[in-house]
Length: 425
Image (cartoon, rainbow, N blue to C red; front, side, top):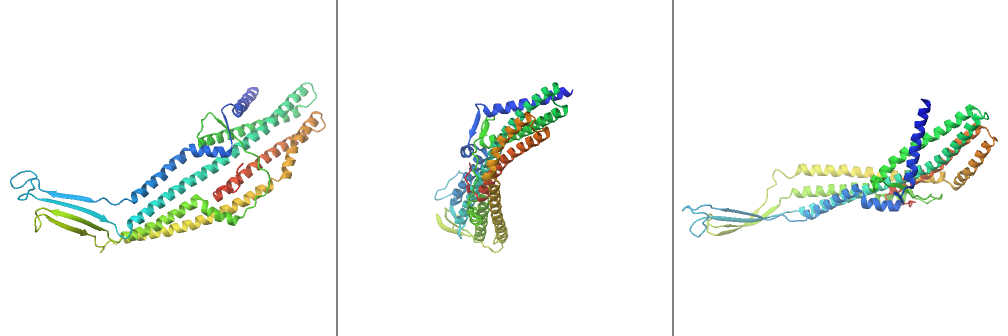
């Protein structure tokens, strides 16, 4: 039974590694840089395309707001006359009344309605820009994490291959009585732990592949291999105060709240204007029912604002504007805090990834090979070798993770400011 379980585990790991290696090197792999991926998702992402329709729809409402009210034509005529004839309208019998009227809006209502519609267009455009900003941020993070996991896969592959060789050699030595069962078991436990970590790495990689394919709208059969260059260490001068001011002109979420405040203020102006009565002007022709035949008259009408002066709508619009003003102030405070935090995180990541540490980590590979040879020649003990083996893996993963942290810090900084402060690699 125990042998069967081991066999199943080995088979499962083999399938995962084989499928991963196949995906990594298959002809349907999509090797792509961040800039190319950005162009692709702007053209193909369905969420962006859907939001673009909302912008176009809002622009159509601006055109609608500019249109004048249609004139109204009304008529009243007899169906039969005194003789029973239908629709007789001569000079001796019958009656016809025709009225043509036009509503004339006062107090600049049409212009205020146009402003509200234009504000709506800006709000929808800001929503589109904010969606683009969020998707771009998710794309950058997903690509960095996929590249990170692929790099970790290579570390695990090297360690697993080395551990397998050691287990094989130790097993032969155990069979010939040159090593203890305890040492063989420890090496097999080391190999099993590495294999489990490799499986977990592949599980995360598959999930991120699904997210990337959805964002880029590519075929499900493709395997995305991000081409992300290692960011060289170096300090980029950043002024949090100026970047925060810049964010207030770039951040679509903040601008959307500002445009909503403008729309609320314009709506308050409109509600005040609606308290001013509109005028209806018209002309009427009356064939027979007036004091004189073929009467033509001028008509002017307007409601008298004795009871309804739009008081409730004016108060509601004023309160909405005041509430939105507080939302804008809170959003401005949040934007500035986001920028200061992003700058601090970026500087911290830069400090952790300095050139001396990178050189030290790169020399670790040479040390690893030397330690492997020393163990095979029995110059160091098994506990010493396993400790170094774990330290090597953790160190390699650490430098890869620090590169990911720096990529994330760059993404967070650009996201907080709303523009490319540090260029993505």
